[in-house]
Image (tube, rainbow, N blue to C red):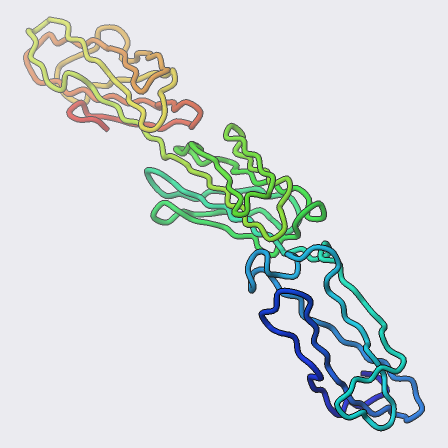
Length: 316
């Protein structure tokens, strides 16, 4: 209040708290003008029920039309009437349309990993969101953006996982709307989730699932006995875990012993499946044990590559 002093505030009449129809509460405010003959300005506000507190359908936004009115019932100067309302010079009504009440929305980005943890970067565009990163612990992490402006005013928002870390692939991307009222699209190939319209009071959850990929290399047979001067063929096999092998090469080397390669120690394998293999040939002019190892930078289809080496006695 400006140019006045409030001396008392009291309920003149109260509505039924659990009422189902039209309800009204009146408040009596008593003040003294300062100076007595000056202009007085009174400003007040009211509480509008939130669905987070009262539940869907029970909040201010759950009632159609313009059901919320605040008005000056009356103004009485001098002596207060006893038990009756002031009605002089009043009924200045202000109404509020329910359509203007928009509960903020929420978007949650969940990161799940299979086969191991890792850091993941995201770019985000749109009102109220920003770039972020998530590092999974025990296979999960999340980022929440709350208090988002819904509807047309809030606009479209996009989330992109980029770049996808080496040895991980994006294996699943799904989004859900808690109220089933938001408009969402996903593109697994590009890792983009688009919330084109976040509805009033809704929570959209987008879950990115990444699978850790790996590979190993093995030489077979692990052991063999050949006659002196006889060629011995070794098969080098690479195996992908969580993806497929691309085209590549493997190089064998003699770690110890009298053996030597017949031809090139490098062979090429053709990918396209979970495994791929190629062969090299060794021989020896003298008796002895020859130990052979092999290494390859194994291309993982769409997921980079990993370098693996084996000593010939076990997969690695």
